[in-house]
Image (cartoon, one colour):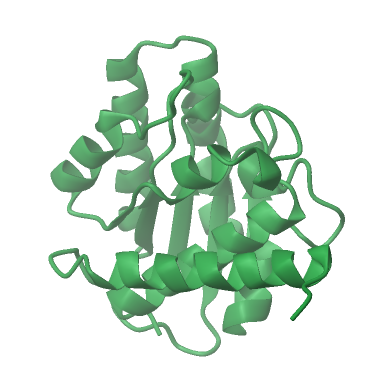
Length: 210
């Protein structure tokens, strides 16, 4: 059988998602989430990776997650935002959208600007505290630090443990380690965001959100 490049690419995406499912479901000791109601709102809060820099219109991960899950997913990503910027706007976002779940993906720009890690960690803790005080649940997404070989920053695991929230680790790092899934050195392309959304969906299912 002769495979065209487009067929091979589709097969590769499906294979990646299948392997991702196996990886996520193998993590049985993770935290859990309360099931979402059909009319609940999910708030995707972050920087350019949430906003969808590098993707064509409608291919950012929040848009694709909405299509996969059927939930309303608000894109609250602002390119260039650091954790301190998130702190300045989280209250307004929570009040405006009243989310039941917040997917928090921040920290990459702090690392690029070599911000103090303790300050970044405290900012993430304060963000989670504010989200929890609004009665919303949190899924924290681990972000890699700039390096020749990417790996999740250890501070995300520390924050997740301290705040008792589920952590989606390795996914973003793995995607950003594959040049075929990136639009530039630090952003995903359409296919990369598709896999990001699929990984988040699988994690939320594993955690019991739906």
